[in-house]
Image 1 (cartoon, rainbow, N blue to C red):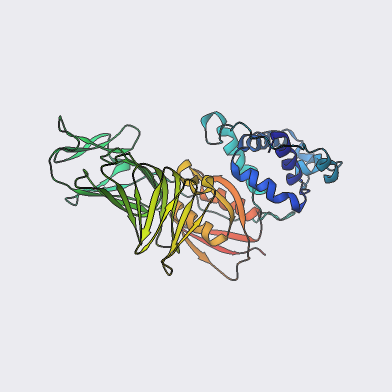
Image 2 (image 1 turned 180 degrees about the vertical axis):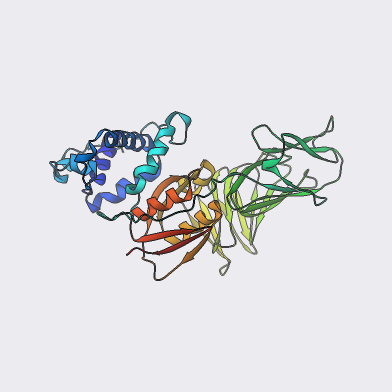
Length: 403
């Protein structure tokens, strides 16, 4: 899709005039992330215009709707560029420093990014309790039982296990390196450590073989201080993203619940939360083999294997990688997501409890939101999207149908 066509579709959507048959095309383009810069710039322009308005001349009608009242959607559609779709050059994302202002704009008027938006729905303001912004938090438990709260530890060597040093780097990440002049694969005891991220925390770890691991909130990884034997093997709960260091002599295995992932050198995401019905592995590059008992499948890049606890059969799909990996990039990204799956992510990241009251509507949300922002901001955007209402009571979020 060309930039010109997306811009026209965007204008129609903001004024609630985009015909239903064009919605799938618009949301597919929006979900691709290729047009994030356009959306961000548009939001910034809108906020500037709002600030320049005379307060006495404002109305309840959105500014973009008033500007387009003289243009019919038939006229807009007639002016849409036609012909072959062109793949645009990927723009700088919102979360890059150069366009950080666009992320702020998303907080202010991001409600229209959600498919559940109801024209004319008024946001019900609630008294909310400010919540602590999550960040890099983790607890490291050494083989001897020593527990270290990593976000409160100073940089440098935290411990020495045989010939291996455990080091907290200046960027806050954890790494394992040979102690002194010892070789990385030299003799020494194999000691197992466990890293745990709490709800509202995340952390990055470099394993002794050079494999990089990103832990999502409420996750753990159990691993040795050095890999010995005929393979490399770790266990996780929750969700983690791996960039596995290639080593044909030592295949890499990740065990999570009832799934085992075998790789030689690749990048993939593995989600195995206990409160989710399925375990999901998504391959980004390279190749992996997933197995559970007698069942096994080999994945290609872009494929996802799902395994339900009730059925020992893998289901393959090709999900949106931008949505699957949004947590690693510091975002929530929802595509036709139901309220309960969405709230499970919110609960883990913001360390809150969620209570549902009454019959909830069957509503699907599509949108993007920075995870660095306060939970109240996100809930206000979701509430403005319509059909659901939130009350924050201390550390509990109550979800009900909108009245």
